[in-house]
Image (cartoon, rainbow, N blue to C red; front, side):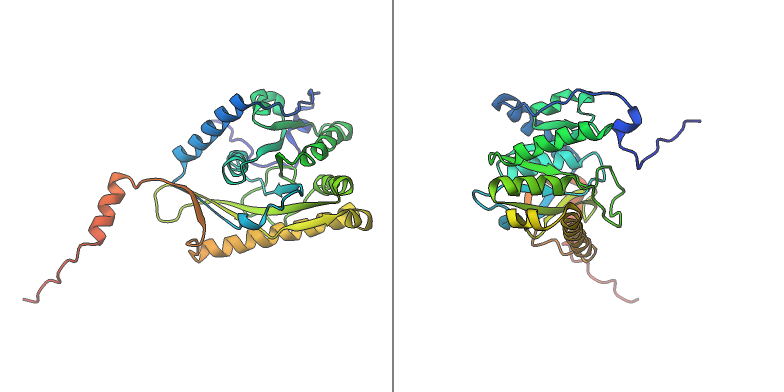
Amino acid sequence: MSTEEKLYSDVPPTKLRNRDEKFRKAKTNKFWLMVASLFFFNMLQNRFYAFRYKGDENSIEKGVPTIIYAPHSNWWDGIVLYNIAHRIFHKEIRLMIEELNRFPLLHRGGGYSVNKKSPQSAMQALKYSVDVVCDLKNMLFIFPQGIIRPPHYRPIEFQTGLAYIAQKAAQRLGKVNLVPIALDYCFLRDNRPEVIVKFGDKITVTSEDAKRLDRKEITHVLENAMTKVCDEQMGEISRGEVDDYKILFKQHLKWYRRIEQRLKRIDIPPVADV
């Protein structure tokens, strides 16, 4: 009898493996970005019926660095974020990936490593993150919970790394914007699931805020903002209110679903009483 894998752990993978791992920076070029863009988009199209999103129009402010932060509940999250960066915002993604040394090619697409085995190793990734977010051709994406949590997990609690990055970037450039997003994967009316993305309200941290507020205070504000957008999205999905979401892609109906749609349009006359 096989032993079932433990789905969720409170201990980060690099601590569980207890191995020293070399820090890897993102190392992109046009060829690898093109390959990754086509590959990751094709993966979504093969698995999901549609990709819906809304609220992105207020996320970017010209000349101001932007950090997008999201919950992390499953394997698809990173691929979804990659497509958000490249196909919605047309930016190069920078994404902190634990155990990048097990998947080294991902640094060609914009990933960089973080090793949580020691505070010194983790700090190296945080300092690099500040440099990344200050380069406006990039867009930094962060999973601030630090570990994978079940879908719709509550309470949403962050480590303080995101607040550290925001503080340092704001001190360096004057201000930084942070945008929480909600990610969901659900079945609506098709036989395949859909990706549903909602962008929350933009939060601005200025250099004055960075001096006045400590990391725990900033972290609490960011936690509340992501909880709010995730709860709003959950309510919209439960009520079927997805018509105002934009479509990144939507598949053609399978042949049996097309037959179903045609049958629904046929008016069958009532059977006469004998």
